Image: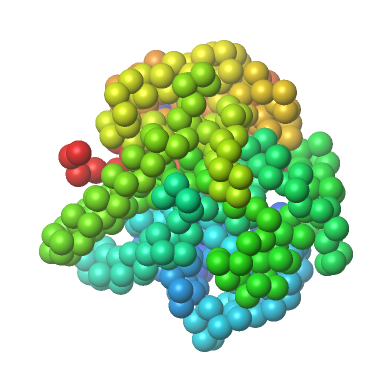
Length: 441
């Protein structure tokens, strides 16, 4: 991309982030998503670190200010001044239930993928002097360590990997990975299901009403159990994306601990990452599909569906079992994914559920392309870097959409989407593509 055009696109992305900035956090989209979302804020901080490192630090601190006493970082931190434009709203969860800090904004009881420590480390590295002056690592490291302790102590399932209690926790809400488990959930929610999302995206681009009734039923069960992770709610899934981001973030915590002169903690975080990688290799690898799959912790069965979630372990390429990284690269470049069309689909083109317009069942998402871009860049695969960067070149002309058709590039979902803008900014302004400065294995 020509220098002047690159600067124009970066300026356009910055304007999206400026428009969504509230003074303490960034909303994912002012219409469809008017509150603060957990992993959205991590992606936004990664982009903002280049031009507004102070804002990036504030973004993460604001999110962590809503951390629960048990260590969980909530999926949503509600801004009650923004009305009822999103459902379910804060009234659904009925207040903090003793979990969130006194006086904090109301939150969901669910969580999202643990990208936060990686984001915090990248933010620190972008402006180490400013980070030190703000005491950023000293303030955020203990909170992030507690977040990981929560996942290890309260969410570890039968195979030693974190379990998600709801599709919303996976970040890939209606992926085919969750279909079989959701079939066991009656589509009979007590709460009336409102769909304000359909005012911002077409019905063919969003999960259906039957899906939403199941989502609400699960959320009701978890809420009614006091968000107690020991109470079965009918959904307990192990996701390769979630596990991978935990391992990468443990390695980021190791770097934070070293910087804070706590070598013992650094060693513990590195060992925790190694345990996650070993469990991914042992329990989630599918040789026939050439990627990692999900596992149903209720039945013990693996879910043999090929999705982008199963490619994300490429971020841990130098730690995976021998030969796995090469197979993942071949699958990524193959006809089910990059080799079959223009952009990276969220579900393999070979999967019977593939739909190029429908949310996580086919469209190309910018955050997933960013994750894989960081992975293949670290491996020196310039051919795949070029393919993945192509999607970001289409972000500004498409109005920074939530996701796009993987074959035509048609914008889908809402527009002026914050993490699309933030990650476009990162792709334009980053000098390298290493996922995080990792300790050697």
